[in-house]
Image 1: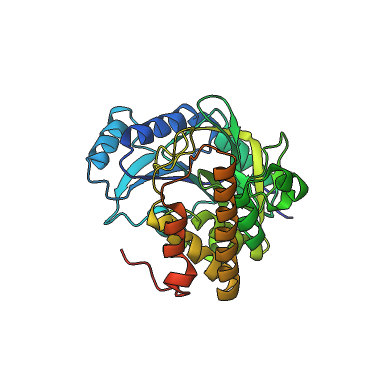
Image 2: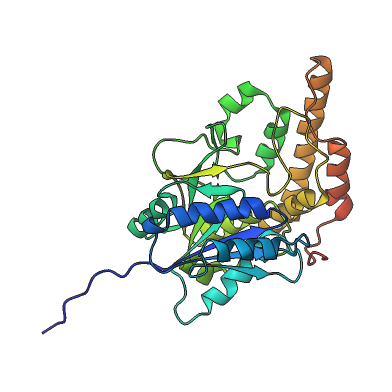
Length: 336
């Protein structure tokens, strides 16, 4: 006589946060998880990886964990260097994957994000109900209560041109060239998802490996999502999961009404790597050329129409210096 099946076991969850000189924000992120633990599986653990902040972050966060009694589910790991977003996340993910009982899901959560009630449970419930869903993201709400895009379309040569041209009529006529997807009230598929709040099924890592550590910051989640999608995994935006996010607080890269600071070199390097790795040399050259053409036309229109300039200083010059036309097509490992 067959033995009846027992209750479905609760999934194991590992939450990973990478800190770099944002200890106060990381503690608020930890507190938001602590306040919502009752909605998460019993076997939930959280690892904060400090990317060699050098400002006492490790001790500050460790003391907060001890003082608040969070030791049973939270810990801090000090990285040997500041290797970037993928590197930091992989420090926590790699040993978890090889454990005797590895987590079923990994939830990447930025230190400048706070989980609102039920955010993690909503992602887990959705993933459990949709076995083809390899990755899922949350609805993101800024401190002013506005919703921002967390789901996106792939970067293409045409999107490089039109996104820099900045003509509203073109965006309306060719909506598929617009990278951010307008948040919708119902779950929907996407082409890539923000790493701010990203739930990943363990089997995705089994299929495509860890995140590419040769990205320092930016484009790494775009790349990871593309690899997963190419292996047949679905990517979902789940608005029932809500997080509060102070955009750019952990990276210094913010979109505001003030002029942006000069774009860091690693942004250009990550972008170049993304196009060469995923689309080849010829396509990367086309994407670079169209990016500069679109931006040049925008500068002309900006001058003629006397539009306010909020772009980073020397953007076009910096872009060209980091383009394939100057840096070439090598995918050598990033020097650290």
